[in-house]
Length: 375
Ligand SMILES: [Zn+2]
Image (cartoon, rainbow, N blue to C red; front, side):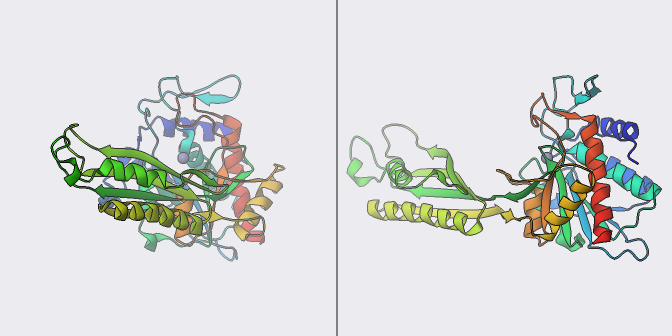
C-alpha cells in the first residue's frame, strides 16, 4: 500500500527546500502546491503578521467521504527547520539510514512527518479508504518557540482529536504528556549613589537581586517541575551603586498548578527581599504554552494504540521533557498527542532517519484513519 520509493523521493525533495525558521515562504508555497496536486486546498492564516516569519500556518480540511461516521481528525507537522538548514544534501545509505552530508542538519524534523502525511493521503485516495473529516495543520515557526502555532488563528480549527508527527522515538511511541512553560522577567530597581563618597544613600540592585535569588527554590523542584534563571543583567562602573538589574527566568511543569505555584513562590521571594531593602521591583510572567497529560483511557491515546497495534508494532506511552505544537493544540481544546516518527540526533548535523521509519509513519497515519472509521 505504501510506495516507499515514491515516499522517500518526496522526502528528499522536501528537505532540499531551504526552510530555516523565519524563512518559510518557499516551503509554504511548495506545500500548498503539493496539497493542491492532491485535490486539497491549503488556507494560509494571517499569523505571519504577528510572527514576522516568512509564512503563516497552513490549514487543509479534507471533507469526509460519504457516510463514514468518525471523529474529526487533525494531523500536524511543522514546515520550518533549525539552522544550519540551507542547501541540504540528503543521501540514503546502504544501511537504510538517510543523512545529510554532515555540514547541515537533515531536516527529517519535521519533513519526515510531512512526507508521511502526503503518502498517507495518496494511499487513502488510491485505495478509496473510507474516512471522516481530516484536517492537516502545517505550522511555521515551530523551531523559534512555537511562534506559528501560538499565533494561529483558531477559527480555522475543526477537529475532535489531533496527532502531531514530530517526536523522536521508535514508531509506536506516543508522547502523551509534555510540560507547560512560563517565561518570567524580574526587574529590580535600586538607587544609584557614589560608591566611595555616599554608598549609604544608594540601594544596590545587584545585592537585592542576589539576596532574592538565594531565597528562591530553583533547578529541580520536584519530579514534574523545574525552574531556572538564565540571565542576570545589570551593573556598570565599580564606583557607582548599581540601580537596576534584570533577571530572565523560566519555570516548567507537567502540572499547570505547579508551575503557577512556582511562579508565585519566586515572586514572593523577590518582593519580600525588595521590601527589606527599600528597593522596587517589577515581576512579569507569561505562560508560553499549556501542559498536557493523557493516559491509556483517553480516546486520542486509544485510537493511536489501536492503529499501532494493527500494524504489529508495540505501543509505548512516554512523557516528553519539552513543549511542542501539540501543547498549543491542547490549549486550543483539540486533544493532541505527539507520535514518534523515528528521527534521531535532531538539531545537529548528525541528524538521521531510517527510510523504513518514514514509511511506517505513513502507514500509521493510514491506520489511524482506518481505525477512526471503525470506532
Ligand atoms: Zn520538530
